[in-house]
Length: 158
Image (cartoon, helix red, strand yellow):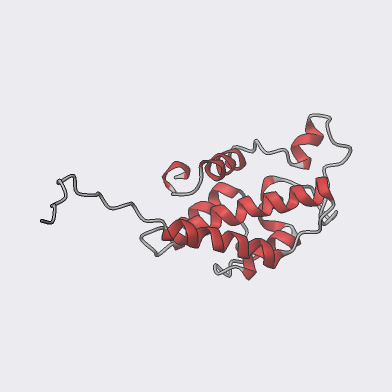
């Protein structure tokens, strides 16, 4: 499923890493002895698992709900990112997979905003995050395959 969605390779790689629990979340860093606490660096309320980071943190949940998807991760009770993406794929009704593209890009931009908060001390803003993701989806959907040009010799005018 991950490789079939038309998004930039870095986003596909990120989603694959998230689905395999390979992201540097606080839970994973704490388990390796690289973090002093497993708590989420944004909300400080619960352990920062992949699911918490992308869906359940209040910042992430607000971002998802404010997007065009209007998705409320807390209400759906997903146990894993993979199950959530499967749900979103079933929900998708556009042949160009716009909803799933948006879900992948929202996840990516939530991760990027989280990292800016942690490393640059820039507070994440849900509205900016979902607008960035929506703008990128629109750009991806507007890209068209260039038309082939005729190889016929141009006619000369006498």
